[in-house]
Image 1 (cartoon, rainbow, N blue to C red):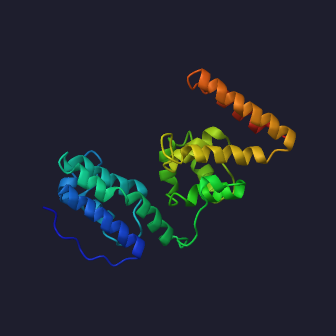
Image 2 (cartoon, one colour; image 1 turned 135 degrees about the vertical axis):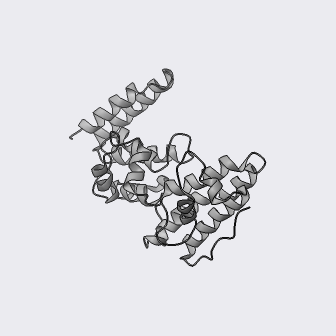
Image 3 (tube, helix red, strand yellow; image 1 turned 180 degrees about the vertical axis):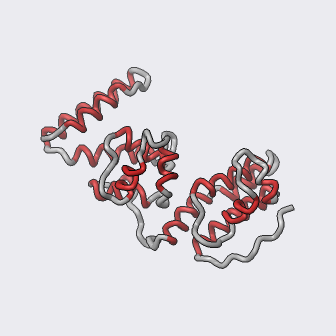
Length: 239
């Protein structure tokens, strides 16, 4: 049986995250030693620190791994209870990170309300808890898809992704992938921002090309030829 945890003495959102993690472990009925016997390679001490409430808020990947271990080792008879205890962990991690960074009262724009590059560059990073650059890069698929220097400039709101492919990689680094509820809204926000920056004639041409690209993709089972052509054309526009 899990041993009692030490009392929590930390900021409110960090405390809520730690409590949720501890509840998840309790629902799984695991000790930290038992949790450490997995392919993820985290020691009992490292796992305990993740839910300790001490120091800085842990990395996103470690928090999600903690919950994953509980789901895997908790067994099928405990799966429902573990899921119920851990389902809010990611939201609590985002809040804890915002609290730690002093931006808790700043509500990031939802994808649907983004109108320009400034909105997009700010909302992209802040809305998902501002993970570390290495976490962004790993989630994006590696340096080939999102170099650290580029990620740093995007995070600093100095630039946006170079093209649609890099934008999708950045979204993936933020945990927003196809199948996630907000994925389509973020893709729509990208095209809205990029199209609205063009003069009317160029914008009308691009909108028609975007419609054609979508039709080609639908008719051909989702090939990305049209998407590549559209991206290249969009990036080459200079008028």
